[in-house]
Length: 317
Image: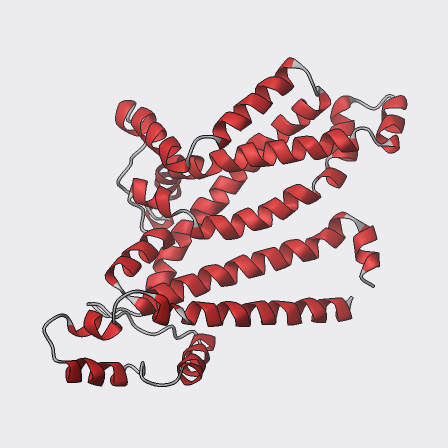
């Protein structure tokens, strides 16, 4: 087990190394000149060159990368190019909780809704409920997130007035207010996950319910709920667990549209605003943090497989 853990740790370090190189390369791939962003228009070529030299942009790529990653390892992601020249780590620290909360709430909603739907649909495969669930999830997957968000805003925010749209309340302002503001954007994000989770889990459950040990449990007179929850759900959850890891990492960085629609101060808004203004350090830091979260979450998901099925744990010994 220790050898397996060390191997996974080495793989994780390699992935993070590759991700950090790609993230740092953004400074060379983004359009525009960082010196122009800092100084503004109307300066001479010599002044721009002097500013690039001051920022270290004239140094070779390996030198610049080494300095940046060395600072990043200590938690220093640099300062913004733009006034008020705020600390990148502080800005990310303020924006990240918003995106993480939305992602966690969306995944929680998706699991609470998708698992019962998938279980009921799989147990009555081919029935009317199964057909309704299949049609409903297919329809949800066909609707883009921005359109679903606009429909929810139009009905529940603008029409009924049940939820705010252009406001955000942090947890420090009160848990009730925070959840009230976060519910509608989280539901917007959750819709696609509900449909995806339900369809994947339904297919795995149908396969599991045909196994001999399930037939034996039914022959012993076990109730359908017992068979589904105690016997079929666990061995059918591997694909779902994998999707959870992929979704969690993706959602932290893909709430851009939802945060824009609801004017939320999260990572999506931070990245879009910074990229639009050419604030390279802010974009680099935000992308690096999102990539780090994505890699760590999927590594934890990968290690959790052994807890679900001892056969996997023994296979790596």
